[in-house]
Length: 439
Image (cartoon, rainbow, N blue to C red; front, side, top):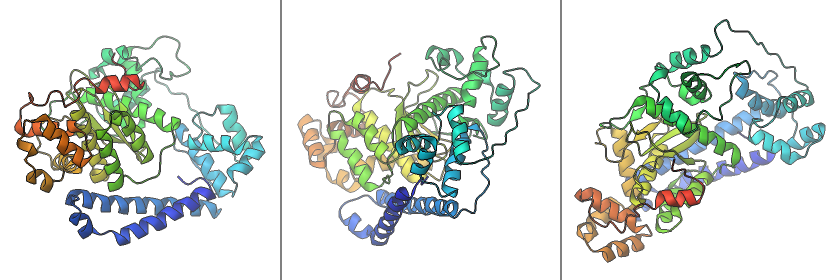
């Protein structure tokens, strides 16, 4: 969302640049350079989607700035912050002016608005309402049912599943219930099922899915849908925390971003650096162990229906698996943002491929690192020589683990190149960076 005239100016500049890039986009020249047709098509679609999104944001800001909007109705408590921002813009007030009215610095207002006032207490929200001269109308009705009954019934009704089938013991063991916000009226410790209901109710993206089975689980993969749902909720909770802690970049996730990500596979700290690289392009990457009842490697989904999120389990602690699964999920974001990303794609690397979108994401991951034409021309796919693999990888500017992993998969021989695939290196790397907890 555009929050001030400075951002409007930046967005308009980006809009002009994107229009120019789209106008000058040369598929023939990219193909001549050896870029895979699938990636070329994805880049064009990405440019077009980014262009449409910027036009929508600018249009909304201009509509608010016109002063024609007088009423701001939040759909829930979390939406109040968004409406406060819209009200300020509609009144023609800058963040600096609002800060002056509140006796605060402009930077503090910017932080509040970036977080949509989620870190502001009720007293501060009341002060902002007064500064904006807004009349606040609310209705709080006492429910007739017991304290926790409404949460399980609401969650179950909307998502159509049985809370008792969730992996409650494991969720509790991992500490997922320790920091959830309980209703103020709670007078006694709730049961695990009740805690799980509250846990899920605080993740709107999970509750808004019309059906438990409206999840894109890789065909042929035997997954416990209830474990997947719980895992998805935790990934989104982590992603929401990251979104309020760090500024997400506005750069498009285009071919240049993919190339930058791929080049990181050749560096020793590449997996950690990939987090910041994706963040610069508006994508959140986070981690959570899989449940024993699943064979999950990764997933792609949306936070707040707008922010792409990639969750990885690090189930296979190898560099080749990390990079392939990561690029597979990036492929879902680039190729399938309008075709199911809201419900999420759940992926197991070695599951059979019968779903067309999964085939597309697999092809995206393979071709992003090495084009089909180059791979077919190269004899490295037949080698057992470690030095040849390293030499080929250096020439391509990618990690040797990626090349070794592709050879292993295509030959279905997982005894090859064990010293090249970075076995037991990812979890340690993430643990050292404070991004992974073993238990």
